[in-house]
View 1 (tube, rainbow, N blue to C red):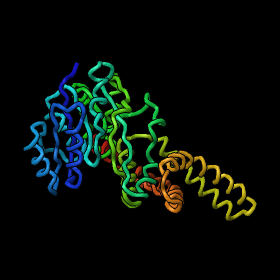
View 2 (cartoon, rainbow, N blue to C red):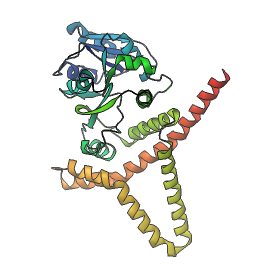
View 3 (cartoon, one colour):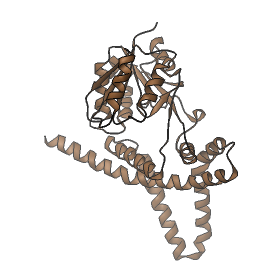
View 4 (spheres, rainbow, N blue to C red):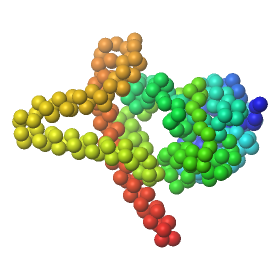
Length: 326
């Protein structure tokens, strides 16, 4: 039985892409009963563009409030009327069947929280390469462990209220903390692979490094994936120690080179496999350039994470220390 669905998103300075997102919302095979767009302190024409759409399409409402994506999303959910909430973000577009696939488990009563899939929509060779390195193919997703992201998730509004909404003290990773709290409280979660959103990867190494720095800082602030980040530090410190040993003792150079070759092959196997498939039809020179970028992208991403994570941990420590003394 169909229930009313509110599609919500929060935006800030998205004039360059908000119209593409709204158009994809209105092209859904299952139209939302309402679209609630929360503007969070935009300094460009984003609110005016949303109002222009709203003047032509009564499903769309513009609300304002919040200081980050979590608080903005909470404000949008609070303003929504439907018992079912679908969430997405600016900077992407939705496949026509996205909403229907995303809310189907909720309406069937088989889930309380649903996550969709997101795939790269690159516009140049660098973005294609970055997408292949950092984003898994659908076949690589383990449905039972997949955590919904804020750009493609749906849930019952009562779940949102019971878990306390998205944590507003986080500027990143707020969706994963939301998922974890829902899981802790016993809510049922499923993966909807047919609910696909398309996004453009970062267009430069600088933008990519900043993105991963912020993600890792969010992990540190939220206290997420400590073992995963620790393993990265151990690997790089160990690698540096091996290099230092090889410089000092020449007999170690061949064994160290073999260790690095095996490690690099294992670390880049998945990205190279995905990239090779996505490079079909590209000229030979473009393929060679893309393949050469893979180790650099991996290195830049790892360094950005190793810088960002301790910053987040420090901020987390300060936040909870301040809370304890308040």
